[in-house]
Length: 336
Image (cartoon, rainbow, N blue to C red):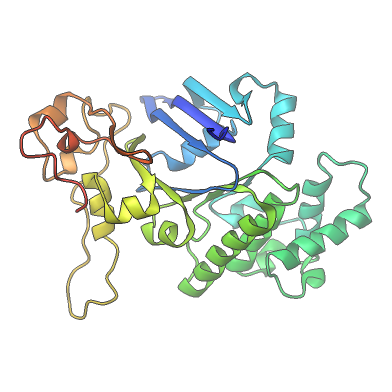
């Protein structure tokens, strides 16, 4: 018996209409998410990760537009929702932690007031005193010391790690079933990053929420996620369980991302690996494989024809012509 996904995204296309033309930020992306699952979305800056998730909750910049596709949350059509129902969905069902907490928090309003506003957004019956008590409990839940005192702090009085924890407390204030985390460990030192990743796992365990974790760091998803989606050029290049992505890597772009992870066991002056070239312009996206210009195994077919998704296991698929079993001598390219 198949499990009904909490979130279904089918053939989603999102563009930004600018003076220069149409920027095709997300191109024919499909994926789903089941209850209690943590899925990582990985890729370089500009690959479409954040735009994909902002499309899911319809929180795009005014120049952005969902051109085509379907988004179903708990079986309901998100694209067909009224503004009021959409606001209710964001405030009671879906929480989001944005990439930079200092710009997401209002610097002129105390932390406690911002959490209380979130709690009372769709629960007017709860008093301000009760909401403040819950806000204190939320700060304790995200491991902020002296929670009661910090309710009266302004965001600029807190460290980067503490501001990020405040964003977590706001996101989970209404017990969301889906939590979207956009680069939650960016600009934090290694020790704080580790604490934030532990916090993510604890929140998932305590609340049972499904989590989408956006990051450019494969090390983060290895430690946190069950399944990984690798994006590039506005498209999904590869998707699979963490073990499949790391040990049965199928796409040349994913191989490049893996190689770029520093090896702590190596001693010496080896230079860090980087993928040569730059991501494609999404004003005029490539006709074929988005990665062909930077791929050292690109073929003529990669330039003219976009590869289909080749199914490598029930949970693992990848978009690469090297995986085509009819391509002579190329059927064994995975797992590098």
